[in-house]
Image 1 (tube, rainbow, N blue to C red):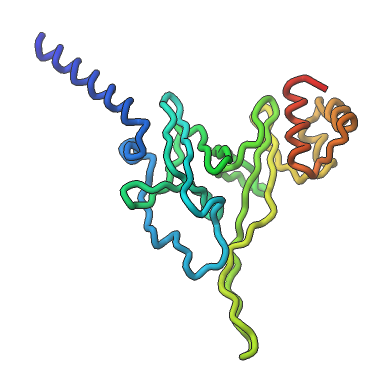
Image 2 (cartoon, one colour):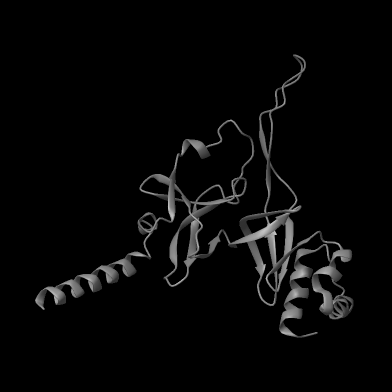
Length: 227
């Protein structure tokens, strides 16, 4: 009987400590949410430009299901589509698993979503712009351009360069994700039976489908039932 009570106490203590430690950055590795990477791999010394939203690590928050938020300095690597953090002088990539809900990095809310790239289904971190009955997401993109060799002694060799590309947008409704090319022509397929109301809101508020802020206003209005 005493052994059973002692075992029960040990189990309670174990899970209490676990719950308390979940809010510490060092515990990210313990629950297998951090993958150690090489600092050298992400120095990009020979590449011009940056693949990051924020080059320096800045205060951020990671949210998991059934757990307290983890506050830690983060940065978002757009090119590799990974969230990174430092712990004990080592670089880690956040592992995105079924417990991950979102992360706030440099003022952006990052969520993991499946989306279409042409006819192929892919998954990755997107910026959540608005969430509700209709949701809108933005994909940040960076392209790595190869080095350009000089063709004469008068020209300078151009190093490989990271360049920001045009953002892509996705709209979601009823568990379906639609690529939004910022054209009015794509709206009937996305909004379907709600399209007449979408037209009404856009005409009344003089909204431009090519402007991110206007689309957020449109979806917010649609979600709240206002005009």
